[in-house]
Image (cartoon, rainbow, N blue to C red; front, top):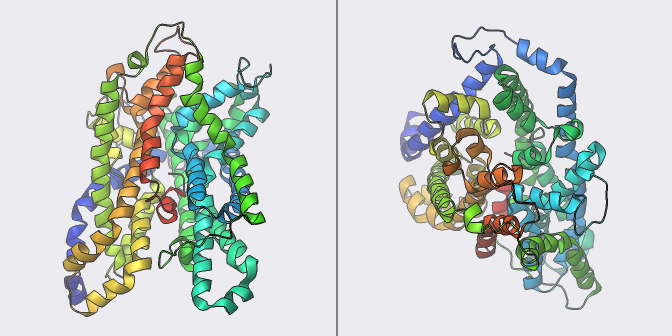
Length: 559
């Protein structure tokens, strides 16, 4: 054992900086979060001196009638949109894969990813415009977003639209890989499998893998989307664990209840994540991570399947085209009465400074990802399973809002950019994705180098880094987009307007506190939304070639 540890000493040394960051900024809040749930927190006495109450907070939480609605809503928005998303993605992937033109396929799948990379705040803003009683597109007097049933219907549709692109790409990649493998095995194998074995079964396997990824975070919902779209009139169908915990802890200062809600969510999702991980590892790794990149062979041009695929694709991207029209065309058909400009509503200095801040956080994220992933490429590494479970637990813990807030307040970091920057360091899903990409394609080569007596440092610099730098940069781009689109951390840690992140400025603008003379339909507001959406959309277009199905697996679960 000691000889093996010494043999792989490079791995243990390599992960030390990243592990120190994880222990300081993730493990400590995790332990604090468990303690917070078991104490009657008094902000004047502090957490350590607050009285111990055991499971009283959990019991009080479960006894609340509205919390049962919260749990039901969280499960509903995790399951029901997922079912319809998978059904739509299955049909759409089968249709799009039949399109002979690669440009058409890539163009349509890129459009399907647009709602996912758009800031959720901008997406919610457009939904508000669309379903407002003064909407120029829907002539109706009913307040859809003020009625619980209709609000749920709208939110279900939005969730389906946001999440459709990724499973479609996963299914298309699975079909391509299966067809390429069948071609190598000969015509007899292709004839034996038929359309069902070559297309439908691989697509179904991809849908199963995507569903497992999603259900591993069964109680998690997109905080920004539900926070901005929920209101007291529709809490019974729109309030989820993420919004409930934020409101209970940050607004009502009932930190014990918020801690209990987080602990309940953590335990449930830890069980689900372990089960999902074992199932994915056992049955779905070849589906998500092909051993080689297959060459696409398009179907015969002009086939009925191709025409049907184009039709399906055009219908699916119509909502996306509408989103882009509202952001980048419609504002120029209006005249503004406010006299305000986009520069006044969204200072360029704020966008530049936060863009650079998130870039710095992303660089640290990339360094952590590559150093944490490399030890997972060694199957005989002593302590590998302990290390993997450690990372999985922290992945499930995610962003621990209240424990982390208390930690940063104790360190007097509130109203600074440091908590926002530090939170941007972490994204452990990328660690598992990067190691799976490498192991599936280059694991055998690494084993050869090890058998030849080449050191682990040699393999790291001559094999691992050269083979993973493209997916690593793509993961970094997705991470930067996530940081740019989010206003949760700035909302928690900054109070001075001059220090607001761009998304938080837009949130305050929509709330009416920044410029009350503006209306939702003012071109200045619409252009501000378009400006906020430009960086993620540009990254999507520029790096779409590197945003493969394997890289997009990192976005398969709600953080």
